[in-house]
Amino acid sequence: MWYIDAMVVKGLATLAVLLALASAPPPLSAQTTSHSSSAQPYPPAAQATIHSSPAQQYPPAAQATSHTGSAQPYPPAQMPQSRSDCNGVPCEEQQPRVIVVPPAPTPIQWPWHERILWAAYVVLALVGYAGVMLAVSTLKKIERNTAAAADTANVAVAAANAATDTAQAALLHAQSIINAERPWILVTAEPTRGVESSFEITATNRGRSPATITSALDQVLFAADEAHLPVRPEFREVESSARFVPITLLPGESATLKTFSREDARGFCESDEKFKSIESWDERLFLVGKVLYNDLVAPAGKEAHETSWCCWYIHGKQRSALVPAGPPEYKAHT
Image (cartoon, rainbow, N blue to C red):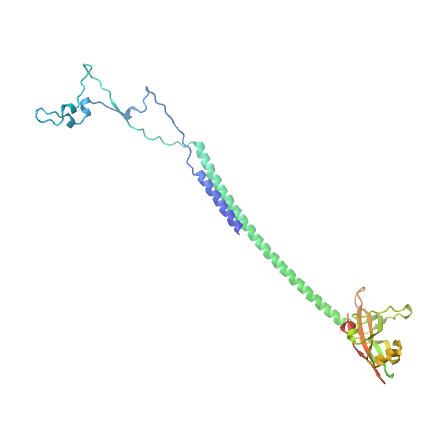
C-alpha cells in the first residue's frame, strides 16, 4: 500500500510542476523606438507649448514696485529685470518651454504560437494527471487481485491439508480394518498331555483370515537373568535337510512347532557343572524363537509377518516348567 501512496504523491508533484510551467506568463517582445531630431516622438496632441513673456516667469509678488522713496519691499538689486530687447532689438520670438507627457502603455500582445504552446502544456498536464490516476487505479486492482489470489491460495492450502488429513484418517481406518481382518499368529508353551515335564511350542491363528507359516526358528540361550540376554537374538541358519515345511492355519487352528523336556535341557548343557548351575538357578536357560507367516488375502509381494517368542525353562528336582519371559524385543509381533 505504501508503494501506491508513493506513486500518487509522485504523480501529484509532476502535475504541480506541469501546471506551474503552463501558468508562466509569455515572454514580452521588447520594442525599441529610435528618436531623431527631425521626427516627433509623440503625437501633436501630446505636446503642449506654453508661450510666456519673461515678466510672467515670476509670481506677481516678485513684480511689485513701490513708487515711494521711503518703503520698498524689495531692493532694486533683488527684482528681476525683463529683457525687452535682444542686443538692442526687441525680441519678438521667445523659445517655447516643452512639457513631455508620457504615452499611454501599449497593450501586451500574446502571439498565437505562445497560446498554442500554453494550451499544449495544459493538455500535457491533464494527460499526465490522467496517466497517474490510471496507474494508481491499476496498482490498486493489482493489489486487490494479489490479495484475492493469496486468499485463494490459503484456502487451497487449507483444503489440501484437510484432504490430506482426511486421506490419512481414511488410511488409518482402512489399515485398522485390515489389521482386524488379517491373521495373527501367537506362539505359546503348553504342557504335553500325558507326559510329565514335557512342553509343546504351539502356533495358533488368532486372526480372521488364513495364514501360511513359512519359517520357524528357535535356539537355546544361557544367561544369568533376562537383563544379560543379547539385545536381539541371532538365529543360526537351519540345515537344508531340516528345513521347515510350510503350514497353513485357518482362523482358530493351531500347530505344534517344537517339543521340549527335561532330557532336552540336559542335552543342551555341555557339562555336569553347567547342568548343576541350571538346577541351582545360578544360570538360566532361555528358549527363544520366531515364526514368519504370510496373509493369504493380502496382495502378492507383501512383506511377511513375524512373531517372536521367549520362554524360561525352570528345572525342579521332580518337575519342570516353561514360562514366558524375556524383554519386549524377544516377544514382538508384526
